[in-house]
Every structure is written in C-alpha cells, then in structure tokens.
Length: 146
Image (cartoon, rainbow, N blue to C red; front, side):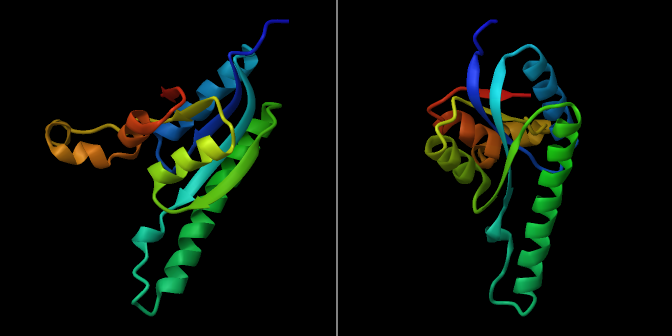
C-alpha cells in the first residue's frame, strides 16, 4: 500500500457554496489515499458581536449554533462516505484561528476554499484582510486552495 502524502489535514469550512467543493475534493483525496486524519473546523467570529448591546448574548449563541450545525452537516456528509472525521468549533478571527490550530494540532496540510473576488476587490489593498490570503501568506505548512 502506498504511503499517504499528508497524514493530518485541517479543513476549514464555512457556509459558502465553495465549501461543498472542498468536501467533494476531500472525498476524492481520501479515496486515493492522499489524506490521512481529517479535522474539520468552523470558526465563529466573536468580532461580529457588539458586547455593549443587550442582545450580545443572543447573537453569540446564534453564531455558535450556526457554526456547530455546519460542522455537524459536513461531519455527517463525510461519515456517510465512510470517512472518519474529527470536528472542532473555534472562536475568534478566522485566519488566526486556522493558523494557531494548524500549528498546535501538528497538521501537515490546511485545506480551504478560495473566496471569489470581483475586479474592484482584487485591485484594492483590502485583499490582505481576506482569510484565505492571510492563511496562505502566514502558514508554515502547505495550504490547498479549492
């Protein structure tokens, strides 16, 4: 049996259509014995909660629930294909959370989607704030963009 290319993959998911392509590609890579252990992570961004407002706790709870439901959905989808997967819910800045978990967890590959930008967004310096671009620039391990 061939040796795997990557033993531990960290897969960042969100609620975009592109994440479906990521999950499909993971299924193919596992079938070809390219990937070993898989951890799917979702991040709820606490910077989106204004804690000075009364409904802050409700907003936080909703963000956490949405992220948890997303994890469950992709976990079930992968398990239905016979793929064992670990899930992890993180809080904070998405790019920073991905990078910290990749280092802490000893992963050898990060897999994530590429957000499509329009022409105006591509020419503005705001691109530096894009999660995918930040992970690509700062990661010490390979990043597979789908």
